[in-house]
Image (cartoon, rainbow, N blue to C red; front, side):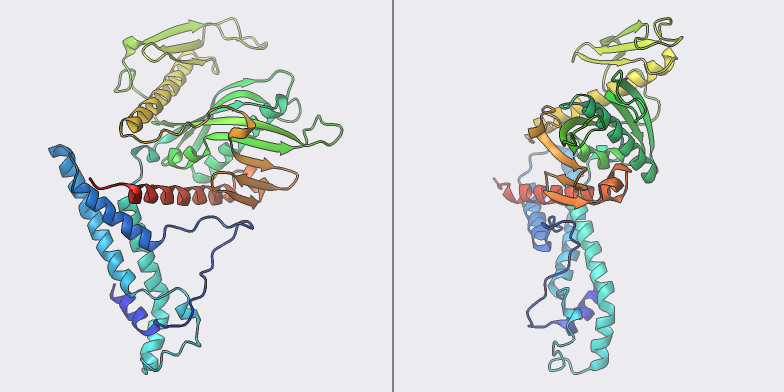
Length: 405
């Protein structure tokens, strides 16, 4: 904090501040990170709201500890913000600070320390943001992606397979493990050009996978000329994606999500095209959670044991997602349905191949680099970060809009 004071005391200036530079991904730049004044205002508002809380003794004790961290982070940011110079002050040598600070050596020393001071203050703001908006307990979990083809027929099934491949490559780059748990192909489609999935379930195991991939839930729209199109017309198709939290590793049969007596287990012969295994051994499994009616079928493996394990994993993920949504509703939070349908109007993102661009309609943001994105590259990280910033802004706005009783 002393470093921030020293750097700013010399560099204060009354010149017109320059506009801070921000990397532009498209003609319309995405949202900037939460402004410091909004962070501070939201922190004060949350502390005021805590004074009227009706939590029981255990919850109050936990809340008190969280507020201590929030107050500490808020104090550090407020102290640093009071003396922090504008980002442009160090880059304007024409500013005449010699009238107030004639010591040239002190001024040069402060100028050299400014980058470190700015970095320190940025870290303090990040700490305050983390205390104000702590990550969800499910953010550190693994993820299960359910991919379903929508409007567009065979072209939609082909693109569903490409999205599965995209997320698999993203997982490899992030150091996670991606496994295709189940898939339902589209007969006669994809021959020689790759797989085509009517439905697919992809499990991504790794620390923080759900925290990143949960923003991929929704309807993905693709615009391109299909390989079967002879007249070069651009077709529009959709694929729906649902992202569920998953606990990696073997799961117990009885746990806090369900009891074994509530699960109906059916064993049957595998169905599908050809092969020595299909229709000859009872390896397929169907689980039905009787209280909720949730059903999971699995026949991907030749081993009944493996299919049973996978089916229970998917069932737990769906039940966990159901419980989380119920808890959000109980706290009067708005439950955002991941996929209302696979209609084109419900899209969250468009992949335009002729123009080599991706448009995320939630921000909105349009960037080039479609090929990199389909390979699971850093273009996806750019989109994810912009969505994270937007989410933070919305959460801060929700805190500021809250009323103190």
